[in-house]
Length: 113
Image (cartoon, rainbow, N blue to C red; front, side):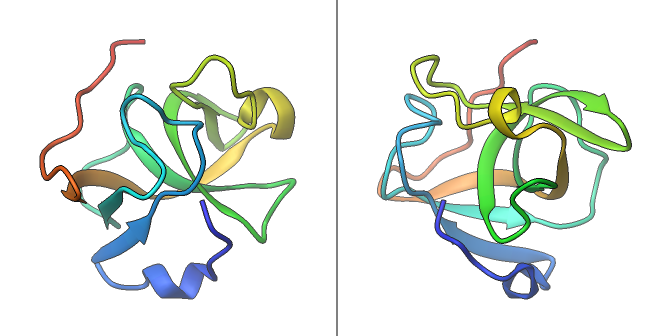
């Protein structure tokens, strides 16, 4: 995920470009997704956009695993890449990814955790 100031996600629905392999196969490098702020509460298994407390300059797309210390513990879907809560700890969720609109439009599959 590219570094993007959180202010860019101030609208209820925002577009975000995915970079890197950490969410493969669910999301791939170059996928564009819609992120919703507000709405229903985050649940385990949701794909979210968040900021790790230890890396506040970087937005990331990860899967919510469980609530932890007032934030969320997040994992990437690609088990070979560990740039998630295993490396950076608790994250604060900014919004939920609700759909991929480029290049393969569609809803994201949910994963039971």
